[in-house]
Amino acid sequence: MKQNYHINANTNSHSRAIIRCANTSNIDLARRFGVSTKTIAKWRGRDFVKDKTSTL
Picture 1 (tube, one colour):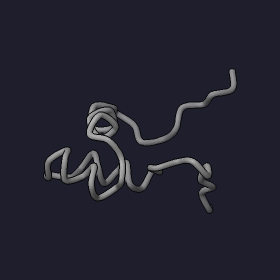
Picture 2: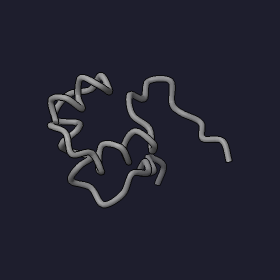
Picture 3: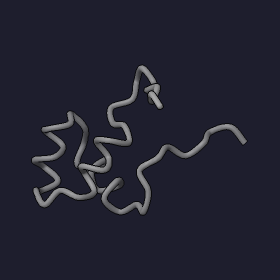
Picture 4: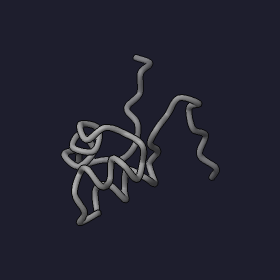
């Protein structure tokens, strides 16, 4: 199944899975994916890599 990414998305489920499993520092990952260290820390702290729904 092909995944559609939002045009403004900086991460996707594949890159988030890499972030969660990586042994490198938050700074190195932030540079690699072009996001902030805060974003890296957020995804490392979550138990999932899928987007939350914004339509409720």
